[in-house]
Amino acid sequence: MNFKQFIWPGKWKLALFVLFLAVDYFGQVQSWAFCKECYPKPFLYDLISWFHFWEISLVISAPIRVIEWFLPKTELVYTVTYVLLVAYFYALACGIVILTKKIKKDSS
Image (cartoon, rainbow, N blue to C red; front, side):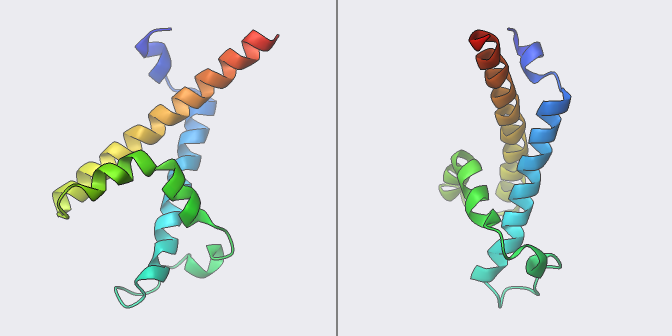
């Protein structure tokens, strides 16, 4: 498998990528609970408060978040971190789909 085949979008890769982005977004909404005086309550906070999106988003984005800890807290760093996070989520989705296809092919 070459790099082009790895990153070429497919329906499962895009679905998993969108799922990762949604979980991360909902995790950011739920992070309001740690700084309630910082800004007004997000619109979706009450609707999604029953599920643990924050914890799941920390697990799936851990490699990028660890790198972010060591960088200065500036607007440029937050922007670059977000771009890296989106690229990481897409690469993770591609890897998971390719790996499951390989496992499925090997088991049959």
